[in-house]
Image 1 (tube, helix red, strand yellow):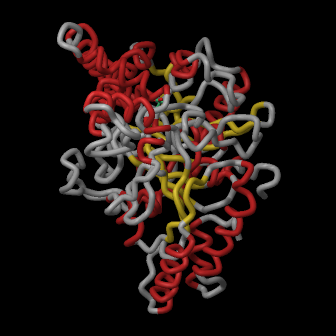
Image 2 (cartoon, helix red, strand yellow):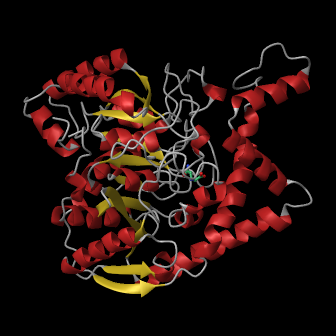
Image 3 (cartoon, helix red, strand yellow):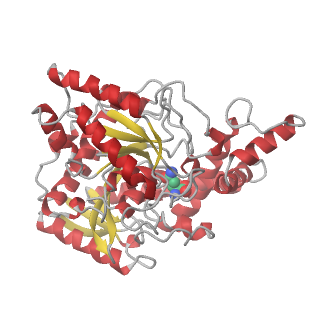
Length: 484
Ligand code: GLN
């Protein structure tokens, strides 16, 4: 049952072969028996899940079901969930019970999805390995000595381990695509503004975007279709109709123009990853696509620009966690300064503190022009690179991550080498473009992800390409040992 896709489970539910309650129990049981070795789930909401499953079964019986009705999922623990702890992977919010549902949670609930619980994540979504969580690291189901990627590593791990058919995530600099790649599943980060950020705890507001993990592009199409749409509560959400992503999946790829950025295939890319991505490109050629080289000349500036913009925005967003208005409060403060200092010092982990300090520095009066303003200008150059490339091609393909899953602890002491693991994903966020990662093979037994980048609002075209690729390959069907 857990190897079936959402599309298959949905058909089984409607045919009466299984009930949502049975499905929900099955996945809850898998979480109970298998998550111990992964640490991917922070909170299980069993009672609520069974009540939602019963409601879904009633809806199915009444003939009012949509394609997601009765399908279980887990939410990344930075989406606010009414009455349920929303920790953001931080001690700061360890005891925070959200008083409302995030827009994404609300929409998927209305579509009839059943929330099983909340997934582990890097604290405040800062990280690429999921080692920055207050709740301990998440382990990769393909090799539990290795990281699942971050910051949505818990969400990627639960889908790869078949503890749920789908999960939500957020991507500020690669946090959906990179863990999807390292865990061998499919993940999509839509265009900035496509999905409401309301109720999604902010890290870097001009970059954060919610999206979906599943095993197939078809399943991502279904979940994204239900998540996406305008929301008056998020002023950056875009007023634009949501296409029927599932309806466009089968379109023929002949004549599709694919660009390979030469900057994505140079130094720093592991040979095994390069080989898998090149083989994937050959598959696209055999499906009728035309492939040419493109150039994104400012790629090398993406990581440095991001590590000014993202910390600057985080230092501002996280100022609300002061132990008074929000968040952990220290014991017996001497005075107000002591209260602020100790509450924030105890509540935030080292990576979050590092970012707040870097960001506060970059925004300070004497340095604003030299760092923040400069980074914003570089950001524009990076967007222009993509716009130029998209005059020539329909989609851009490349590796999602320069390597497969690395070992726990391998990069933890070296933030710069950790930051470089997002070298192919970060520019997409700076430009606000949609991107996805699709399983494209293995290197030394570990999954490799192919990144597909589209022009603004071209999620449908990306999902179509990914779906056709998945019909021609079977990488997305492979299960990690012990989780089959
Ligand atoms: N790894 C990047 C960072 O640490 C991106 C994180 C994300 O996308 N949330 O900021």
